[in-house]
Length: 157
Image (cartoon, rainbow, N blue to C red; front, side, top):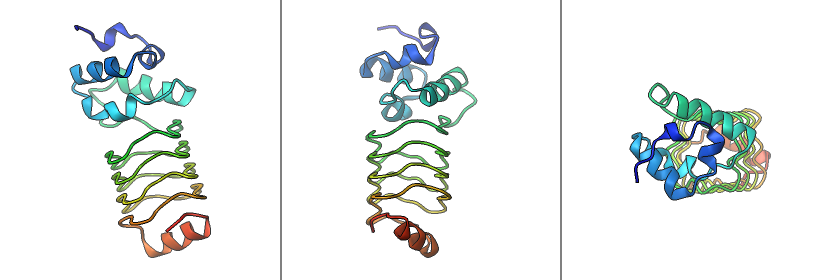
């Protein structure tokens, strides 16, 4: 199958493709490592803005711009989110077991009922994050002062 991202002029077109087609398109562009993330994204306004920026400038952008995206309920277990800016993102109920979120920005991110068991979380910014029911058991790298705030805010350790 000979496809290119050029055939899908909008992020909305990309979102409408079957998962296998999305993965093939990303593989052909050398972006297969983002297939687990981009392949699951729904066509919400924030997600479409992220996809438009990323797919139009993928040679200059090292990581999808995830600010304000809706990743609620996605399976991102084991995914590399090092230095990801997830400011104002919705990650409610997401599976981030064993994910690597070092140096990530979770400012005002909604992590209610998300599962981050075993995740690596060194130097993460948590300012204003919503963490009620967020499972942080067996995580690595959370500073003691952050652990205290997270517990008080409803995270599970």
